[in-house]
Length: 392
Image 1 (tube, one colour):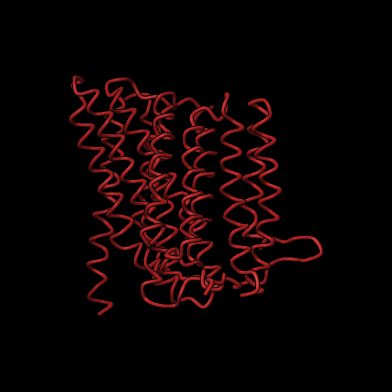
Image 2 (cartoon, rainbow, N blue to C red):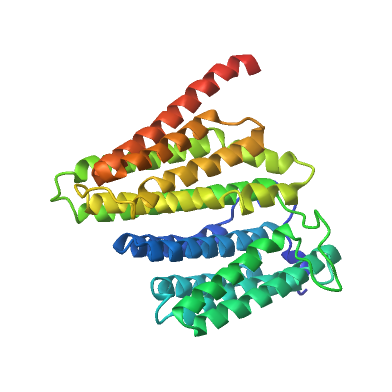
């Protein structure tokens, strides 16, 4: 008996809410992509390179989170869905290889790999829902139409000169990021009705948490590799300890009182699709971007510990933790309706540290950033402990 595309949909059982081995295998490509991005930034962190990196962070997150939405709806233990992930993995490897030179001689390769991942995945989902779920089918029809427009801009940018390339790629990303907010409105068809996709909020929360672990793991890998090549510097042991501690503290801040509440909120809400969009699709972007920029700042402080601070590198050394705290504060506020004042205080303190940048060395900026992150974690831990008896 042949397998119908109806059998490709995710089953409603306990196991279906857990990340599958094919999904975890797929994530390995993004470990490579994040390492490529981090090393490119650390080697030449100028304002122009930083702007390009922001574009790449937006692109990598968007292709990953949209693939996660599709695997949330489909059964990844079925062979056709596994084959889809393998194809996307190969395209992801090509994309990661081209990333460091995307604004020089490999722009078209990057654009083709990115567009292929977006369109192949969307067309596959379109076929999977054909004849099984009319509302979901039309939603993916709209998504495919939007991605076709953005892909044309990606490819046109890959063929253009670097300055025009950036403009076209920013326009492509703007279209893609506006899509969910506008419910993929298409002329003559209109916008997709709300809550058309039967998603599992718990599964999305777990997948996003795993991507945060990937980003934190990439931080440890690149920091360890950079420290090994700079052990002759007197400040390396101190910066390495701070870098490792800041990674642990970021893990603690995200997982100790944030991730589980986000999963509960996504699973228990009456509007799972809308909640997942602003809690995960959009809400996790600053968290991931903050971790990546923090890793870049740690790499730079390892390679130039005694060098006087500069506003060229401060956006990574201090801006990364600011983005991370702002993102986790948003996630926790949405999940629990309780504003984490510790995070707000951390953002203010980190922003104030920008005033001291020209007067202290890079390793001192790193120590300050780590101390503030630790202060936030301790404050939140104590506040939560005090609230527990009242809740009981």
